[in-house]
Length: 114
Length: 111
Image (tube, rainbow over all chains, first blue to last red; front, side, top):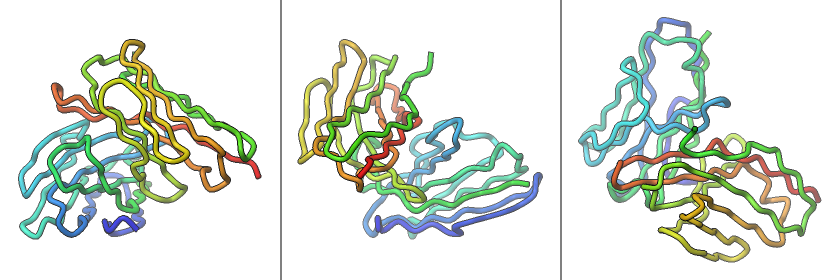
């Protein structure tokens, strides 16, 4: 158990809908990362927050947004969902703002868009 | 050309064999190289971390980085059925502030 929690574990929704994924980092970790994992694209970095501020952006679509709250938990919002958004979404946390150091991954949220 | 290339496998080897997993990359700015292991239905976990070129050993695992060839490897000695997982290479460039993961190699260790 990495200490990172993600809810929900599974989500099934229809195209055009909006969903929110939630992540609680390990105690004491200030950085939260969001990733999307699919069979064809692999693990893709979406966005990083450090101590409440956006620190780095990866391949995140404009339909997607995230935030990190004062208690350091984070939410990833996915809107106008398309079939291609079906994937595993992972949250990871780390102590520092540096992505090269150990990131602790949560169990993931499996999103299915029908 | 993709920034990071990794053979997806699956790679099946008998228990006790030496396993070699590899990634190639194209961006010479990558300085930090990581290997993550991902069991089925779990999140990835960090196995090995190296900076720049050279070797690093940790128990049965050895990570090798050859920056001149843009090639990294992970060797697993005395492989065990519990090593069966997907192994993802990852690379980070502080210049570009970019982290990229390979697609992962599925490894099966046959008892």
